Image (cartoon, rainbow over all chains, first blue to last red; front, side):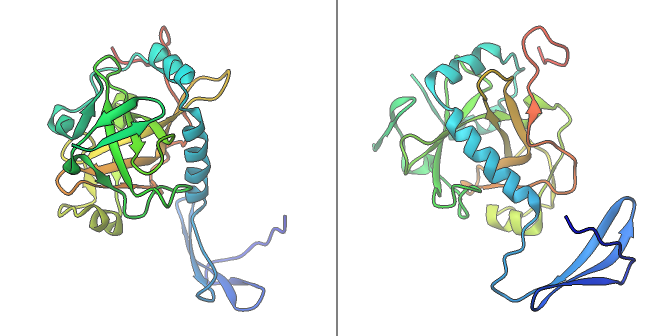
Length: 91
Length: 154
């Protein structure tokens, strides 16, 4: 991994037409300004984590694993009654 | 009344107004835009998010506040517009918006709940999104308290 130190206001250039500028640093957080061609997809990493986790969660739904979750989970009455009308009930 | 065949729950009878639209789908499942929420009386508070398009696709979900009682949801203006929600971004999960964490079960490991990317549903418009939480530090693999361990709700 290439590691570059930048101050506020400084930037790095990536390939043709991509610029990443440090706009602000405060409280352990960095605000970046990114300039890139329209066809370059820019996403927060969380989107990828969510996609990977959704894949894993979808695979998890097998009758055996369902039983293991239901047997282990001892949650409270978290199901809000105000929205229960939107559920379809199992018999 | 239409009947949906499902792999995990058998045939489920539903009405058109039960369908929840996810205009953007879910990350990794962008083509799945229509779901049903299913609850079984014996499974409370667990609910299932079942795809209307793929009979084998379902997610196990828990209300976020059943996992973390003081969970705070933040939704961007774009998220709220997608939901057809008129209020502001500081919304109470379990209030008028339904906020669910998708549960993942891995072989030989405790189940985890995705608190970083809750499924948020507006019952009024029957629209849903998966609202990535970029401000709060919620984990996408929050371990669920197991029976007999501390931290469980009772």
